[in-house]
Length: 157
Image (cartoon, rainbow, N blue to C red):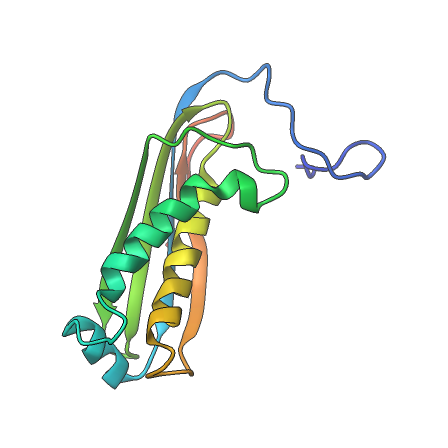
């Protein structure tokens, strides 16, 4: 399969989706923020001085998903119908797993929106906790599922 964002002369372009059908599309992305056990304990006890880390990170992820077309140059702006961002604390190694699910009725997929939601949620966790732990690591950001559209369903762990 060729790269769809490159024209016949090798120049970057936005893909023309005019002739595609509008279908329901969904994407799920995951990522992880690794941190010291003490930092995780602060987050879970809601004792981080900047406030409710996971609440703010959830809203940041949702807001970022809605702005994906402004952030990624060749992405189409989408009228997203749903974005969910969830967190799961992990004891070993200590950290927080992030899952984002985005949905749309559109001519193009919503994978980038789910990936942006995870990325910005992770960055927000880092920002809110960096005074306590500058060694946090954002890792394993990946698409794990997409449905809808001509290419069908994709899944991975």
